[in-house]
Image 1: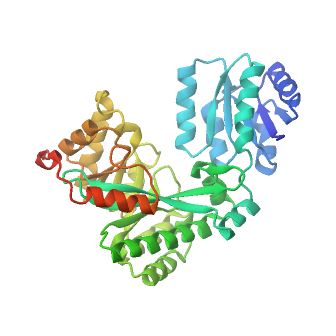
Image 2: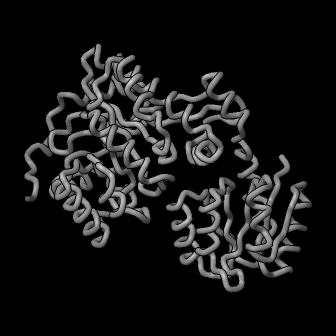
Image 3: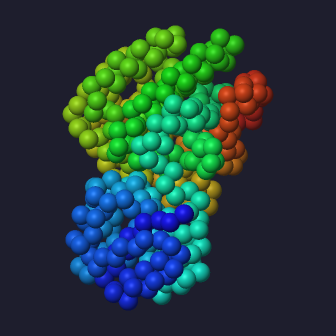
Length: 393
C-alpha cells in the first residue's frame, strides 16, 4: 500500500536520499527543510508517516514535538538523528507522554533496509482510521470490550474491572486504541464511541450483578468530552437504563490529557462527583500538569503509572516515586491504585507501602466477559498470605 510520507530535515542530502529510497517503493514523499515550511502541510494535508530530524537549526526535537502535540497530529512519527540511541529514546518517551504516536528511531546515515522494514511494518496497519472506518466500526459492531480486574491488594478480593476498548477490523485484525483514539478525539468521533463503551460496559455490569458478581466498573473518558454540557445527562440516563448506582462507575481521565475548557470541564466533573460517580486520574506521574489537575479537579482515585510500578523491585528511584505518590494520594483522601503489577514481589512491596488496590498481568490480563466470570469464581474466595502483611502507616 502506497503511503504519503513527510520528511522534515534541514539537510538536503537526507531529504533527497529519503525521497529516492521511499519513492522506489511506490510511496509519495514531501520534503521540508524546517518546521515553518512544513507547518501548513502538516495542518492541512493527509500524512501517513512523518520522518523528523531531531535537530532543525534553532529548533530542537522537543520544540517540534510540542508543536505537533498542539496541532494534535495523529500520524506516526519516526525520529532520525545522529545522536545516541539513549537520547533518542528519551525524546520518544516525551512524545509518547504527550499523546503522539512515536514509532521509533533510525540513526543517520539512513539505510534502505531499515527504512523498508519500517515502512513494511507500517503498511500492515496504515490508515485503519478514517471517518468512514470509524462509522462503519460502530454500525457493524466491530468494536468490543475486554475487561481487566482490579483487586484489593491485601485481601486479593476482586473489587472492580476496567473496560478496555478494542477494534477488530475484518481485514486488518485487532487495532489497539492508540491507533485510533487520538483521531477519534480530534475528528468528532470520541463521543459516540465513549457512549457505546459506557452502554455496553454498564449492561455487562448489570448482568454480572444479577449473578452475584459484585464489582464496580471503570471506563476511560477522554478529556475532550468534559467540555461538553451533556456528559452528566447521558451518564445519568445510561446508569438508570441499566439499574447501576453511580458509585459503581469510575471514569478515568488520563493525566497526559488536556481539558479544552478547564472551567466548563471542572463544572462537569464536579457534577459527576455530586452524582456519586468516581473520578480517577490515570497514568499519574507521566504527565505535565499533575498538581494543577489534582488541585482543581475533585478526583477520588489516583492511579500510579505502570512505568514506575514495573521498576520498584530493582530501581530505588522508582520505588521512592511510587511511595511518595501513594502518600500524596492518601493525604488528599484519594483511593490509590497501582497499574501494571507484574510480579508477586511488586504486589507485596505495594502493600507494604500502603497502596490499597492494584491491577496488572500478575493479577489478571485483559479478558473477555466470560473469561472474567471464570477468573472471578477462582479468585473471589481464595485465601492469600498477603492478608497477613501489615500496611505501613
